[in-house]
Image (tube, rainbow, N blue to C red; front, top):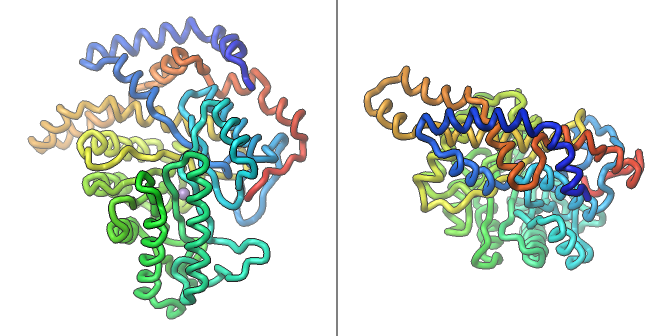
Length: 425
Ligand SMILES: [Mn+2]
């Protein structure tokens, strides 16, 4: 475990310059009528879940390249998320994928999570691949399958995932369906949607009262002619059909190019049906690249709607935030540190938008001023604010630098081996 002392030692090399930068920013924000202390309080509360599958070598359908010191077990995955949280203070949750990461000894897993100050976020079911010796194949669908026996099998799996989640203290399940078709005529759209709705309703009814069901959507992949839950409207329709415990989940990569995701977010929040968020970035499709690496302004605009929507729509429950990225080239832990930073910075910038001034500019149809207000916030370097929060919480002023200076990857290679293979995926 990375000690507080080790973090402190690296922090010391940066503390003077940080103090100057934070002081300057805090003064500037105060002069604009903002309260830096209040902003720090909001940043501290912002916690992002890390999925168990993001810690191993990511990849594409063309294969994966191993890297040294990958976590071999669920316990080692918890260790890695614990490290991210110790550095950033913004990732206090792990999201498990079943059956890639089935906890064998629930108490040991819970104890390890507690030791790292982690909780269990949404559990994720998997009906997009067949497990060994599986009696009913998902090749032609799961919750939407034409054969009731296959649908029942997929429903039973989701119920089992809920039970595992309950034992861990999770409060939600995320369902992403790969169901769809590759060729026109292959599927009856209406029947497939009808079956999916019935299946999801049965899963929702099996959840404890304080649980939430998150329904993901995606326009294509792995099927290329149609997917059963292709867009937010279909997810919203299903969430409504499943009642008050069901919500839509927005994954940034699950849209056709140039979709106005911020508008989708606004609409779902207004309806009280936005349940959670999967962060990643993309250039073309579901690229699953590091958050904020390609289109940081788009991420900011989404956060602007999130901040406004969360403050305005008290009917919408608190959102579940998760990073859902995976690729071939970076050290996954360094990649996650970059993603966590990008999320925090976008959120902070959105908090800086002067909502009162924006409201007046909109009422006056002052298009120029509206743009200025958004871009003034976007162009502010808010990193000193994020660093100050971390410093006060005992985290790292510069998580990535601390990760490298304290040789976290080298230590993992020593302990786990240069050719360690990640469990799961
Ligand atoms: Mn996702």
